[in-house]
Length: 143
Image 1 (cartoon, rainbow, N blue to C red):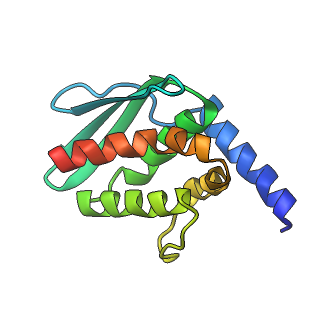
Image 2 (cartoon, helix red, strand yellow):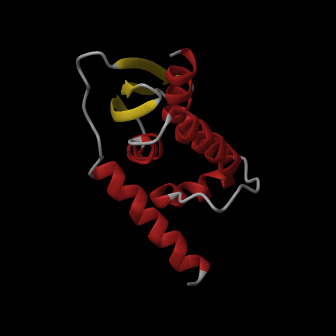
């Protein structure tokens, strides 16, 4: 597939997650709640995680922001559900490497997250893409 076609596909995936976000909402009960914002652009997120032992059994988000930040939150919640905390944090590390344009272990199935690779070319948008991931890291590391 040509680079142009791949960019178009990635844009479509990002817009699909923006227009039809997965896991949008708030978890009640004993959920862990993390609020973060990006003051430079106004993006904000409230991430709620349900943990059982060392496993992320559910994840939801609410927030406002650009298509990159909201799509990334949607993709992240999909990616970490059902994973143990260590794997979720490892995935966050890999995502950080992708955002920096660095090499990463490609034996990890990134799913739709791969569509955000192009953000690395736009330094001003990296904080948008990483907001939800930083919230997840903060919550899991403090838990």
